[in-house]
Image (cartoon, rainbow, N blue to C red):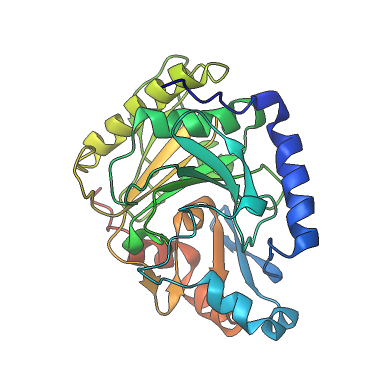
Amino acid sequence: MAQTAPAAPSGLLARIELTRNRALESGSLQPILTERATLENGALPFSVRWISSLEHKHAAREQAAGRRDGDFNPFLPPEPALTVGPLGEAHLAVLNKFPVIDRHLLVITRAFEDQTAPLTAADFAALAFVMGPHGGLGFYNGGAAAGASQRHKHLQWIPAAAGEASLAPQTARLTAQAGDTAVHTLAELPYRHAFVRLNTVEWDRPQAAGERLHAAFVRLCAALDVPAAADPMPPYNLLLDRDWMLLVPRRREHWEDISVNALGFAGSLFVRRPAQIELIRTAGPLRLLAEVAEPADY
């Protein structure tokens, strides 16, 4: 069987833009309108989004965005109008139908795999096709307790933008030398976590990058006693930019009635009602994250 040609990295952003514009015109892409506030927790900034009052006119859209119908798989097949193109033989790039962040991309497996299945080098290679040339933030919600809304395996990507989710405020506090492969933690984070530097990843070679990224993932799993090859895996969130990878084991999806996914650990939270912002402000975003993750053991 001939291998499907991977999406050319140099043209990916252009294809995302073309697909986005056409999908907006057709109504296939339905962004969720939000408002945003910034909270400080120590020196770490957090952005909290909530559904705009205008968005409540579109109740069906809000309900569909949060749907968890076990018999419904929006990725098999993905909606043609939202499909950007192939990322290697086994993955496709598809726009999130109900994005809160513009140009939010899903990296899905062509054949069904469960979201709790182990991540593979091929999964990371598909993500590297996107992140190699375009940077941004990649992330993964490992199971429903980690904030996954669909069972079909999908990594996710958002472009780098001011005010959006980012690992930089945390990783700027880490000290690592060239070639460092050690696992790092931040004492100010009150939940179990581990960072590893990605400075040996060859981002211009996606297949090689996939192998290095998978090795980094396995290293983080070992540091946190998470079985990297278990099927199903226990719940966790994974985040990475081109410099660092972060793994956070999870124990539940919600704090109060606020759902938290991987982006929470990059400083971006989402609520459905403005009143929930005050709950977060009073408790503090780090306490919220500690309640849904596993407590720190240091």
